[in-house]
Each structure stands twice: as structure tokens, then as C-alpha cells.
Length: 183
View 1 (cartoon, rainbow, N blue to C red):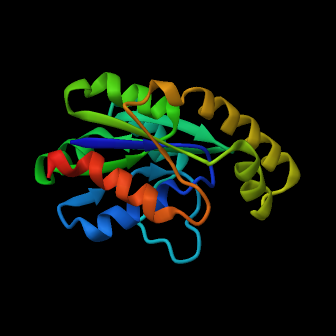
View 2: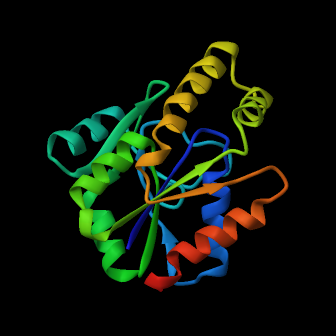
């Protein structure tokens, strides 16, 4: 099963998914492609497939991407062949995608996709988390505007999980319950 997890920036999507994978050996996270530069500690092929803009354009033009999007001048996408291969090997494969990516992937793979939206306790907490990050003011405002659009799309998802400050374990337990039937 391809389990797509979405939610606004800083809501803890990757943290929740990583915690579920740590307790569920049969589940894995799909590695996606990006044109952004690796951050400290990130490994090509483990965290992302780090590709050039030209390589990404070729993947897109050749129809090799299940979905793709642009964020802050960088491209991100799911390589279709990689997704299909991993879903054939593992009962649960997580993809952390934005709302447009989730829509495209669900449309492409409707029979094998479950969608989960992770939301903050409230918008004020989310804005506080975003402002605590070291992004510049313009990028913070863009992230806040994007988060509002994403929160408005939460009703499109099969499941919604609240990741409240100090209650990560509740979000992890909720996602574990969602994937349990597929293991």
C-alpha cells in the first residue's frame, strides 16, 4: 500500500513517519527526487535522489515521474518506477508529498493509495513553529500562506491526524493504527 502523508511545513510529517517506520520493520519511506542541495547529514539515495535541474527535466519529459512540484525554486518528485518497485517489495510504503502530489499520485494509483493529512493543533501553533525556523521573513510568509491552503484541503484525505505539541506519541499511534491492516 502506498501511504501518502501530507501536511503543512513544520507539522512533523517526517518525524511521525520515521517513528512509525522505526516500530514497523515491514514499512519503509519512499525516496523521492529533488533538485535542491543536500543539507548537512543528508545522503543521496537515502534521504533523496539529489539530481540536477536537467536530470529532473528529463525525468518529467520522459513521463518517469508519478508526481512533481516546485517549492522555493527547487523541484521535488516521485519516480514512478521506484514507487512501483518498492510497493511490490513492501506492504507499506510511505510517501511524504504535498497536496498536489497527493492528488496526482492518488489519481495515478487509486487502488493502492491511502492518504493521511497531518495537521497542527491549531494554526497559531503552526505559525509559531514556522517562525522559529531560520527562514527569512519572505519565505516564512510564503510558507504560512501555503500552510493555509494545505489546511483547507485536509478534508480531501482518507484520514486526518492531529500532531499536537508534546503529543507526538498520539500521532504515531494513530498512523500505526491506519497502516496495521496492510501489514
